[in-house]
Image (cartoon, one colour):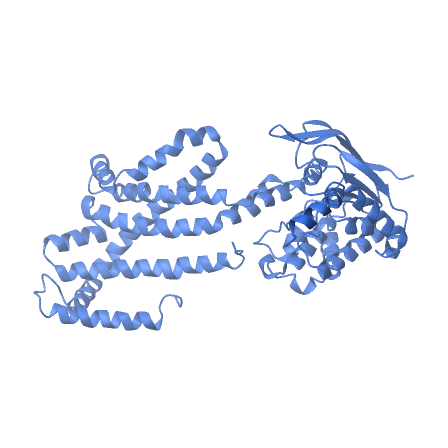
Amino acid sequence: MKNKILKLKNISKSYDNYSVLKNLNMELYSGEITCLLGPSGSGKTTIFRIASDLEKADSGEVIKNNALRSGYVFQEPRLLPWKTVSDNLAFIQQNFLQKEEAVKLRKILLDLADLREFEDNYPHELSGGMKQRLELIRAFSIIPDLVFMDEPFKSLDTKTKYNLRRLITVIHQESSISIFLITHDPEEAVLLADKIYILAGGGKGIKEKIKIDKDRQKRNLSDPYIYGIQEKILNTFTGLVKDLDLKREVIRSSFKK
Amino acid sequence: MKNFITKPFWIFLLLFLLFWNQLAAHFNTLILPSPAETLAELNSIIKNGVLVKSLFITLKRTFIGYLAAVITGFVLAVALKKFIFLRRALRPFITIIQAAPPVVWIALAVVWFGVAEDLTPIFLIFIVSMPVIFVNIFQGIDSIDYGLIEMAEAYSTPKYKIFRDIYLPGILPSTVSALSIAFSFAWKSSVFAEFIGSSSGIGYQISMANSNLETAELFAWTAVLVVFMLFVEYYLLERLKQKVSRWRYEK
């Protein structure tokens, strides 16, 4: 039986009277990758910010152990421009680890992320993908219990995305660090998550919760089981597709010459 | 200095000197001394020791007034950013100080501190350059990326480290430009204050040369002022800027 590492209980949040979240409930279990999936504007980032203590909810509770150590991967890499690659990691590691331990882990992570030869470079000398990899390994560089990731693959090309996904998979597998991954992309969700929460949007809360029982290493998009789940997720994104079918006749007649 | 002293500059300077020389031939030396006469005068103030003595006095005053302005401007900018009440109470005063013409300040300083004192030039330097420092740093604080502070706080970084490693480097670019702009203000106001309200320093020497109709000497002092300003701006401050720009990110 896995332990609960974080629980969101009846969370509500509104901005300027516009309700973004209403009585939202969610649980994260240790050692799992939990994925929060939803269209843009559905309150994903708000949940990320509330769960990670960056913002307060209007009501409800975030229940977690006070000693919980968290890492963060922000949508846009938040790196100190005046510190080198290596010092960006060290700056955060200082808060949690002994120097010797920090140096050792830093070297290993820089190697994994293929950034070892750039350790003395400044962030503006790195490509977008490299910066995102640095942002990612920084989150793991403090030996956290849980890593929050807010759309870590956004604005990355397919190849970089693939490599980053593999990096996360392998680090997760060998460290069993829990991950809370926020994404809008069903493909990422089905390839990475143990559990997927699908957000309805418009303050309607969690629409569906899906559990995936398959070894992450053996997952691929053409596997019938994974494909089925992806279809299931896509089917929850109703609205547009349904209406579109009803409008075929209108479209056809409008474009007649 | 390599950014500044380039071939086109030397060529233009040479043309300028030739032109000046030609023009000076047509005028009385009281109206327009030639480059050679200016150089001779420069040589004589170097030899009789007046140059070194006056330069030292003016430098000392500039340094004290400028340093006081930098510290006060910096502290005020940080304090007014941090405390909303102070901001509401004091922010308009900075603009008021800036709005008053320097002549008013020098007139007041002469009344308050007298003519022979160091205090008159120092006061003017302070009052003219402090708002420049303040405004630049005040705006510089706004340009700090709040996301970085949020990130550091999320990773439980202590407050003093956030100040030292995020706030300070974050305002460094605007601080360097503030230092540079304020220095040219300080240097000019110190000479101006000495011209009107002091009995020593370069400004005083200029005022003496002026009233004795020693136009060549006036030119010589001007050359000293300009060369020194160029040295500070393109040698000292340029080095500082290059250091800053090593990590400076594309905006």
